[in-house]
Length: 127
Image 1 (cartoon, rainbow, N blue to C red):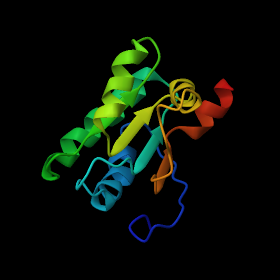
Image 2 (image 1 turned 30 degrees about the vertical axis):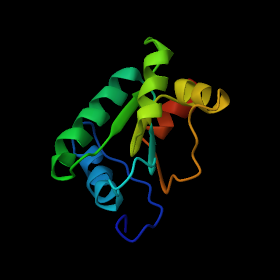
Image 3 (image 1 turned 90 degrees about the vertical axis):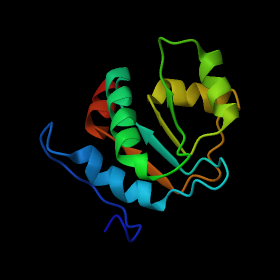
Image 4 (image 1 turned 60 degrees about the vertical axis):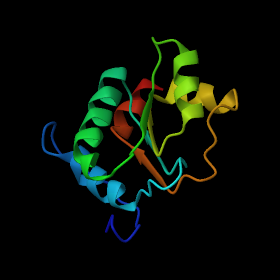
């Protein structure tokens, strides 16, 4: 279903492989020709952002020149802006920092074809 581009809702326990379940089909769709943002993954916490990004980096080793950028609070935003200016194929971030970058016009989503809400229930609980 993911490979066909259909929307999907998945639910399973921690450690069951959810990241790879959405990550591998996502990586297959990413074109690394150019530096165009194609996917946005939102996670509720900094720790989960780092975990998801690292899992995608490991799984994406077969994709030459894959660029994954993380956007999280608690780190200087100028470094993240610099990373965005360098280019990214996938952005993994927290809603607050992603929203901030969109508001500041540092993150454009016009070329994004895939959006993942990882632990969406938790983000809704957090407001």
